[in-house]
Length: 217
Image (cartoon, rainbow, N blue to C red):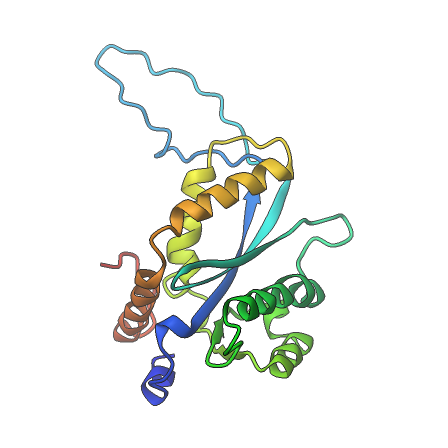
């Protein structure tokens, strides 16, 4: 990835749109650390009945650039289709993204932009590759999966989960509303610093010979 930047200086961080997915739940319990309470001497620790994570869930697909959230889509699993496939990714996610890009960049359109995504099968399948090539939306090769190197995994999704955990949503509409509110809150100052950190992490990963970085400063 750094090789690409060194050979192509015209690729700036402001031209990258990154994409990733995460499951969101109608109820996701808070971690023990999040639920920790201060217990004073001789005080009896209250009994807490822990609820498990809900079965009902939906897959949040997010695209964002340095300014903030570009667009998002929700995939709701069914008994007949539990995972997002290439057709859904193309028709419900990429086509929506391209429409948003053309609305925001009326003069330049997709020219000069780069899509950063991981190597999930629906991202690298022949239909998806053919679609992106036809639309002339350039892609950046993603490093092997590593949470250190994915902007959504080291920043956006952990922050989103912190906001949603411990809350109960009765239906998809309530969950969507909470996700929208959380994403607006997280993106109010833009994401340029996230891409700068992403570039720094790439360099750090090379220095560590590709090892997992437990703590990044």
